[in-house]
Image (cartoon, rainbow, N blue to C red):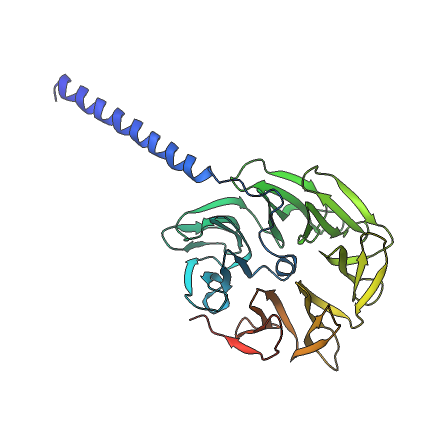
Length: 345
């Protein structure tokens, strides 16, 4: 091979490398150019996040983890029509903003989706067509919520405390996979968000009510007189399970501190959506999923038994039997108590 041919080959290879690098830069740049969200936006409702975030509603569509298909990501109308698959990966904590869906995948191996492969346990972002998926963070979480342009999530570290318990922190990362930051050294429950503040109950030191400002990054004590679990803010009140009163569901006014009892039964989990609250009681003689109307106090028994993963949308509220992935049940969120089986196929 003469020198002229070698020179031509070298030039071609060099040009190909330049084109490839330019293409990679363009694709990477496009992936990371995520339009800004309203800084006060929440990617899902408080109650849904507390219940695993298996359903999220946005722009006239419902995104959900399909229990009938290994909790892969699907989308449909609120009326349960036009159902289609978006992504794979045993998904939970679904959040939606603009043209993107954010979620946690607990799958340890690779999962094929629509035009991509997601690999490993962690936080992911995909477009609403499910064709452009991006890894935001690796690791395990048991709580995650999109607020503005950040994902707030619990992170299980590889460290242990003096009791041998794995340390869990509250972390934050941008929707563009930048500026990952440790915020709180405590295994708090994410979900109680309203007007730029995350409300939470302490875990390690106490169970008082705190708020974390997403704009100033400062935590402050809301009440050191309460011991709370699963706080939810609605219409100027903080709803919570009272650890000092057998997990009764109560509400405290943020303006004057007055407290009212909403449910006297021991509550395992609940979901406040608009003017209704769905809750699962703990009563060995009368386990039941109930709905209370906050306007008139009416209580309806939805189903006898023990149910979990209670997620609300504008049309239906979904739930599963304890220890059973399927069937998934649903009931109209507002009015009517006729329970039916959700069949997303």
